[in-house]
Length: 322
Image 1: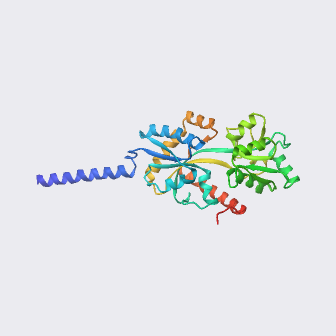
Image 2: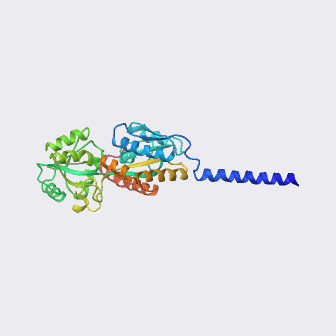
Image 3: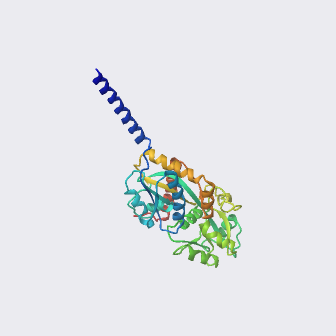
């Protein structure tokens, strides 16, 4: 009898221990137990700055190293898509990552191969003209373009760039005819815009604002759906009568699609908590982006909407890969 009682007690203890193991595993309490990796673009860029800023604070919260792994934009996505789906490898990427497969064949699908963690930040663009250009509002710009179809040019940092697609979206919604002049980068495009050799451009707030402050460019509107704290007082393009217009750059955190939900939720909580800190938000604003911090579902919805909207536009422009 005592032996049977001992065996019964031991079996009960083993069952409790097993239950504890299952509970810990299911709810991610054993995670993380080693260093995490954030794959992002080349060192020195906006994504790299935000990735390092956030990683330092997340590392403190998780009590594990969070290593920033800089990769060329062309290989960032595939690097993470092929990584183990265990919550230890994340991708920090922007809008380009989402729309790249719409422009060229890529070995990954942003909607199928990745799970959204959180929308980290957003960066509105600015519609700008040379100070010598007579239009002082979006309505005046549209009116001028309609009165002289095909006579005005707009600059972009290259065919298929976000500046190009944003302006084509504006053209289609406003019903205007302006000619695309692609440049090899933002710098040369803004130089010609400042010199009046092209008449308009949509570019990131961080790249445009210095030229506005120097008196070389006039900012007409911000391209976010709502006014931006980055450019207080500047109206939106949508307010000029293009109610559905929005063209912003977003920065999001992603993991391989089969990452356990408990680990996905843990990453979301920790990163959102970091983004709620005033000093983090202030540093991101100084870098030209607005901190967000969303649910996984909200970023997924943003991804789907972006791919759908840009997919239609790219197809209409004949830029889709064949």
